[in-house]
Each structure stands twice: as C-alpha cells, then as structure tokens.
Amino acid sequence: MKNIQCSNCSQEISRKAPTCPKCGHPNKVAHHVSSWQVLFTLGMCFVVIWWLATSDSPPVSGGANSANTPDPKSVALSNIELKNLRWSKEGFGNVMQLSVTLINKGQRDVKDIELKCEHFSNSGTRIDSNKRIIYEIIPAGKSKTIKEFGMGFIHNQATKTGCHISDLVLM
Image (cartoon, rainbow, N blue to C red; front, side, top):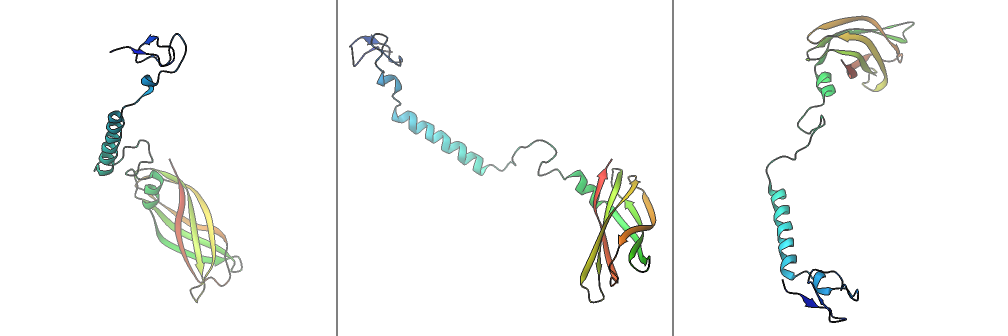
C-alpha cells in the first residue's frame, strides 16, 4: 500500500494513519469509506433481513415460557374435574354448604384447590359469588370427596350455582 503526503505539512505518512505524526493534522484518506463498501454493507443487511423475514423456522427461545410449551399450572387446572356437586343453604338460609368429588386426571399431585362458585337468581341474574380454598392434597390419578364444605355467606335469593376451580398449587 502506498504512502501519501500530509495535506498540511507534506510529510510522507501511511494511508492508515489517523493523523500526521509530525503536525497532528487529521488524515482524511484514512477515514474515507468508499461507496462500494457502503453498498456492500447495505446489501448484506438487506439479505439478512430478507432471510429472517422469510424463514419458516420458529424463533428460538429458551426456558419454561416458550410458546410451544404449555404452562404446567394450566395443564393441571384442565386435568381437575368436579363431579357430584351438591349444595345447600344452611344457617338460616344464608351459608352455602358444598359436597363435591375432585378428580385429578393429571400427572402431578395438586393441593390447595381454589373453588369459585357464582350464584344466580330464579330470573338467571348473577347475584353473588364465593371463593374458598380446599386445603387438601389430590394425588395424580386419584379422586377425593369433600363433604359439607362451608363456602361462606350466600345471597338469600340464590337458587342456582355454577362452580369451577380457579386456582391450585402444584406439588
């Protein structure tokens, strides 16, 4: 590579030197980027962006929250089933008593099942709800019957109820 002359003091300097070693004047040739270098860089950026946009492979991500990996708690919730649900009003008609069989069809033991019941009047209007935790362990593949479980106060005009499991703890 040929040397060049400093535009300020005419000293011979390397093309790559950022400044003249004699006078300190900036070397404009060393900082110059040719237009073909700019076009090549832009072209490569375009190719990479196009390749990423048209790639059929899913994005790579790690950890338990991957889009293709279901949440273990959601899986457990979908595998718990309520059977033989019966309820009544006790305590002068203002306390809900519930009997239910919980069936764990999942692969993991669960405990502390949160049960939510919504109550409706004769007209079908939702008028009340209760949420309580049943502090029991339901082993995987087993069932447990809960009898006369106190769900708390209930509206005196409630005539129908719908219950579901809203939360649980995995073991």
